[in-house]
Image (cartoon, rainbow, N blue to C red; front, side, top):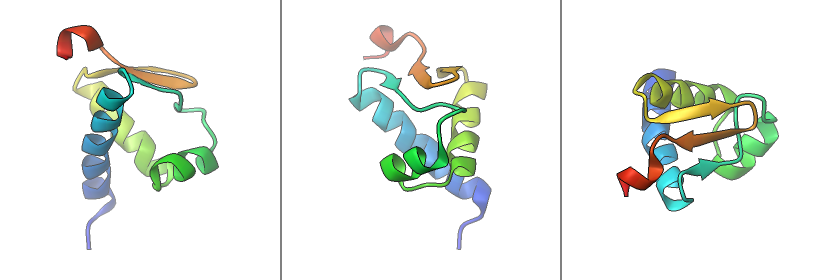
Length: 77
């Protein structure tokens, strides 16, 4: 069984794919309700926030209250 950290890292890659498939944008963020996160991605808010934190630390995304976006999306495609 995977640890929470391993699940978050796996989800980081899934979230990154989602961003590429949705023009670099996700309308869920740190302040989004856990129910919305679970409905869209099937993960807990904790795993979502850990994955977002991982992508942010790697300087791949920007974070706002209600959205996350790929940095420099157009230069990445």
